Image (cartoon, rainbow, N blue to C red; front, side, top):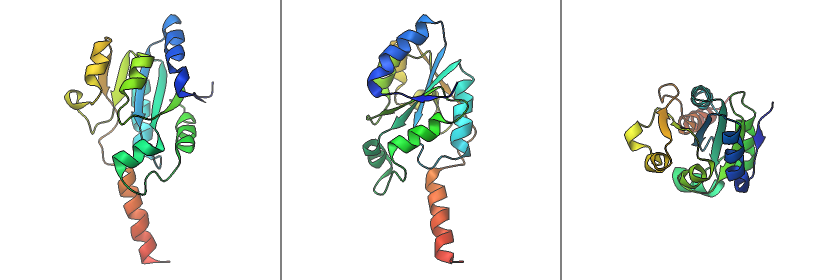
Length: 162
């Protein structure tokens, strides 16, 4: 089955359907601006926490607020399509908030996964997840890959010339 990018207003119905089917729902989220190996490993780790992975992709306005002027590089629709193309991902959804709290309250996943740049006690949505009985997991490899570093390297190489 190939992954689908679903409209934000369909998240609640998706969660209800998956729970009715007895599926263990996992949610992960991020900006995913310039997809890299750290993203792939994070989402593969998230998928291992259940059997359906729904990935929230921050909207363009949210990425700019979180990462600053000049970001995102790739518009949200393209970032969501790239994420959805990954083997570990079942569904992707674009959301507007600076945190994924509202999406989590609609989806009600069993597990909310964050990358290794977080600890369980500093996940912004942890209280929301606890409120509906979900669990927070930290997954992926050490945070030594970043879009910011990739952009800096591209800029450095561009200044060096051919």
